[in-house]
Image (cartoon, rainbow, N blue to C red):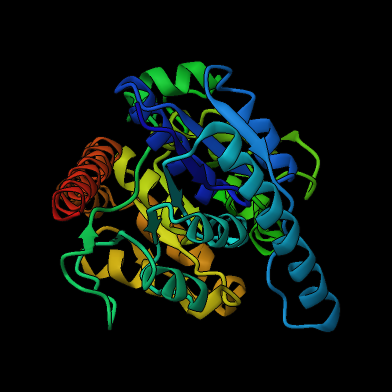
Length: 379
């Protein structure tokens, strides 16, 4: 029996793949604990999984300001100490880190205890913290086609982004019925990520009448604490009522995506993996201040594979409305995007990652046993 700790808090993009891996490990008899942040988004999502074990950990993102550095340093020290105690308490055998500020302290504590470390990078740009940890890891999981300089190919696995077991594509009719949306509506879904995106929320508000006049209904996920939820009804073509919905958070993202004709979204790795799984055409708007410009790299990769369209953040006001109208009314183009997304779906990545992780732990155990036997024989 192996006890695995998974550091995965901070954003939905880090937490959901951690949950996916924990689900798979628990099914195989490997007890798992998840270190999450103290953010509201982590607390809310974790409540959906009462059979999994969550441990809130202190921590703060690394911001390049005196106060930001001080908060990061304090969070690191507190999470390092608490992680070290927790590992001893449960006799932890391995740490899996999914990036983000919640990984660094636990990873360094695991390193001090001599525990194997497994690092997953979901984005197509690798930050300094992950590069630092990768050189000290038993395994580094990267997106398709990526390599890290100085990291042996034997350590690297190109494996993609794990999605939770229940996250699957739903037939459009069923998804629409579940959400209370007419099957005849032309539906645009707008997503700013688990933290929301004020610029996308504002774009929807500014263009509600423009969209309604084209017969386009909207479903805007505003982000927790960004905007209030509500419904707006406007008159569309032929005096038809066009409904726009504003929702702060949903636990049913696969249902929302499956109901959409088109999605406008930020370009985090998690959002792209979910869009790919649900085969929904998308216009991706990379967050311009993302670390190492990783959202632009993520979006460009999807566009290069024929799975979506990229619109830059600075072009939202001038170009996005026309882009939406062009894509949402072009049935042939959207069919091509869906076919390409189908070919890009990596399948059950959580299962593949769990299999590789378990095999690595087993090989490590055998290697230690052999070394111990040789030493005893020599003495």
